[in-house]
Image 1 (cartoon, rainbow, N blue to C red):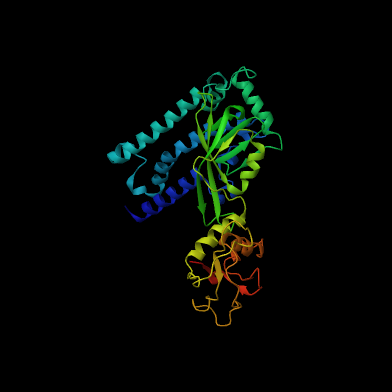
Image 2: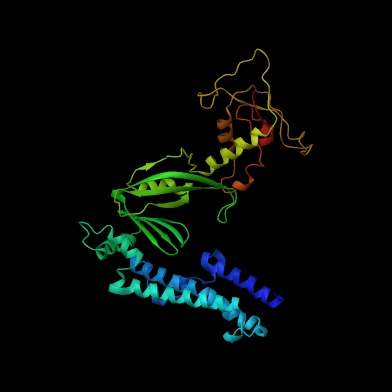
Length: 366
């Protein structure tokens, strides 16, 4: 392909992906469905269900227009191809244009079908119909209940607009680009199925643990769905949630930055040189928790590993007195809580003799 065609194609692909998945930069610039069609969508706070019925419908229409937009853009980017004269273009371009028109026609047909009988055919409306039991006699009554509870300020809400989790007094809601999942709290139970730790986060300099919870309902008409949230929000979720939560995968949930740091601290110490206990010396219980044997010894090693000869670290002559977990918690407690990115490189005093040490000086006892 020629250079202008390649340039336009790459630029359009980037634009389309950003428009569909909406990074923060596009959101800040107002290039979102919610912002571009705000006058027609109305207010989410006033009519939550009605807002998302319209939002998902217009989203499908706009996203289905992207292939046709590419063809129209190529008419300008590559005028020598005469794409405006359909009978003169190659078979591949004709096929692409036909598929684009069919996709657009199918989208309009689908939206018209959804909008019949006051949007009762829409997937969100059908999801609410599964809860059309006493005290809710119709899906409109369910929508009114959700709208009312969404307006309350004590709801739990987290996540980006296209992947939002909302917990009200009665409902568990998951908002996605094309759908809204709904489950009744009293009919549901949640299971922690997965935990992923991300070292880099756009909103924080510290590692972030993302939990995946599966929402299952005893109502057979309600499809199970997954919700994701930061582990630091887990406690707030539990306060708002009346449904039981199980930990099927035995996931360790880190709810504080200190918990996240402790895992990193242990992993780093395992890479350090180990300490062999002298013959005849026994390990005493850790004086921090008194639950496990003391398993760490502080030896000044950072200078030997290429550190500065004028390092602030000092030699510690204490016998092994602390387990790795307690020493890691002590290390974290002595840090600037507003600057977690500096924790691993900092130095703290030994909890027993006050000799300064860094993470490279911590040795596991063998």
